[in-house]
Image (cartoon, rainbow, N blue to C red):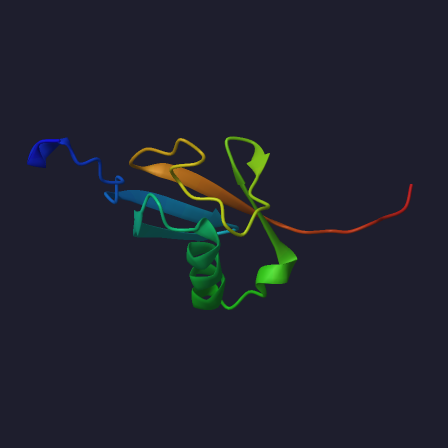
Length: 91
């Protein structure tokens, strides 16, 4: 095997904007790093309890703590949207 044949994981960074109500923060983030860490940092910066916010990318809820931007096929300048989590309710 030649020295140039080694396959290395893509650790490039992309820009991800997280939006929640009137808050918009943009992060440089590694594509292979779990998004949960980014979402926790976002919630801390805007002083919101992470347990009360659900985040969506392309209409899909980001549920798994270990899901990465790479797993979701995210590219540069993508947007993750946050919404207040409401459990239950009445008819």
